[in-house]
Figure 1: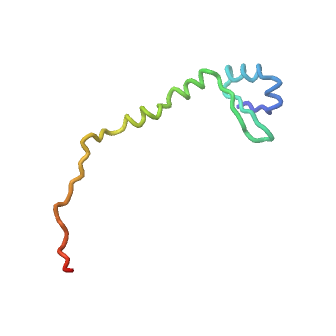
Figure 2: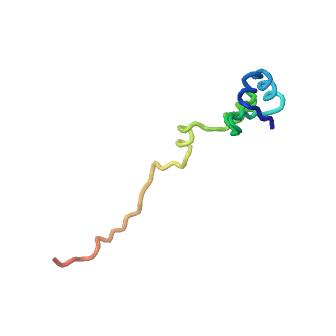
Figure 3: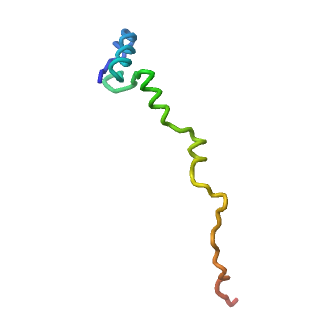
Length: 81
């Protein structure tokens, strides 16, 4: 896992990209906190290929075309007014 400071990553961007391609994700920090990751195109595509879109996800659920709720025929108790 390679970690680059923002200033260093900006100055050596070509190297950061090459490292991401050959060695894996390159983490970029700003003031000691992780802010970004540079990935190779192969890794990016493998991550995004597994994500279904929202429409397909919702339509892929159980079918409820004939959804019926059994109702009790009891009309309740008689109330005297």
